[in-house]
Image (cartoon, rainbow, N blue to C red; front, side, top):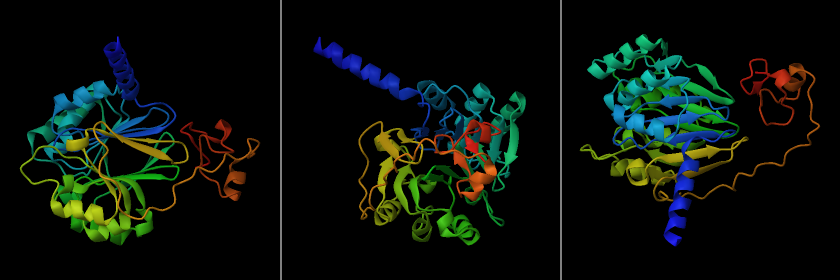
Length: 334
């Protein structure tokens, strides 16, 4: 009887953990082996797949496991096979409206298969040019490759995810020339601090560097990695993350890493296996969600919202009203 109860509890827990819950932002750093794939689902149920790992079969299994009902957008950080192969099955199944990429055509068969599949299902190509994309009430800021980059890695497309005060950043396999150019283009305050950060290039030696991490200031680093002959993650990269004081998670050791973000920005981070490496820096006081203001906060129009310095208002925030949210995306008075 006891064994049956334990099995029942386990099965209930697994079932409850699969589909992204409504009303919160969910990020899953998927365990795709040696590759990258991040599934982002807004509180309204809109989803983006940023990279897809190196296996169509593995991605299909993950999409089924997490009961993904639809994809609005797929993103290829760049055209390497360990980032785009799983996007093929995602595009075939969900026919997303857009396929965001760096505009630098790949030369491999899997790149041609992805482009052909997107064309067949009517998915529109979209070149990264620094756009801001609203995924429901979540803001996605595209970090486009700076001018003068010469290869796929240094032309990686980055994505900054913002919801309330929460920020997450992923930048593909970018290397020092690209991150240096991004720092010239944007003040450090536009990048960090970041609550959750995906390690560049699976923790490669030529990925993250001290200057970039000083700007990003990650609280948690997720390394998407599997068995490999490259030495990823390198000791140099791990040392950088420890010096930054970040907690470190690895998909080869921790499985899929899930981040759940409440309205306002408070978040929890959990791993399928283990707990990762604890943060080592002196932590700032814990983020405290302020008490909800009185429910009688009302704004007659967007001019009043802007005058109060509250634009844009997100769904769930005091004063938000569907009447002020013309396109129904959860962001009023944009």
